[in-house]
Length: 268
Image (cartoon, rainbow, N blue to C red; front, top):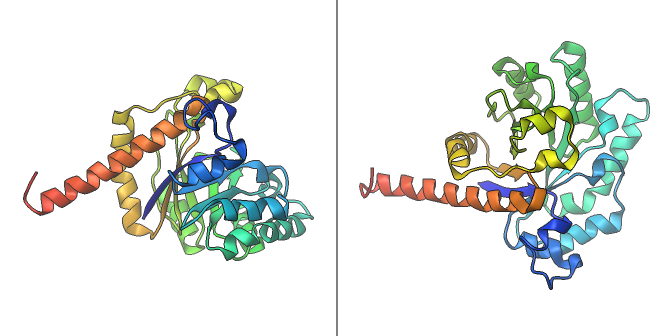
């Protein structure tokens, strides 16, 4: 199963692009969840959410809608209070997990976090601290984006974040499934703005249909290796993430229909 969504949903500039102008902002998640199957939320990087907020997420969405929460950034570092922080983080997400809507927690590691034994052991400790929640790891150091590192992550059941664009635009996207769920994020290809750290403008990028179509085969391969593939768009500027998410859904549907037609001998 491939599920497509965006990184965040509560953006003011989406009102004229995606949300109806008359829609109450409190109903945006409900509206969003009727059109996409997943959402990644980043506020949890800086603070543990209140239980009532998490419960509202469950109530506003239905079916098999999935969430990914970004884990507190301090868990990527060594701190004596990490066990307590991880416990509070996992406990706060309990309503979503109990409802079967928690796909995983994404933890982002800085470029200086290289692929070495001590760092790998730290990664495994984080996985153990958030016991019961799938850990998705995103690395700024390219050493982790290799078959060798992927093999180690698969052995420890830690999912690798496959990120297109962002600061790593000059390099080919490393699509690899190491654990459930497979995770892909299209971050936008404004390389100069990412390098300069140009605030929100770095997310101002609209993928072309050709660019997304080129990634369909890789996403389909991930689907053959995992029961669930989550695809997010982080190019949220002016609602471009929504446009591209819809575009990718069309491309995935077209590819699937093409495979069926080819199998029936109707089209090659």
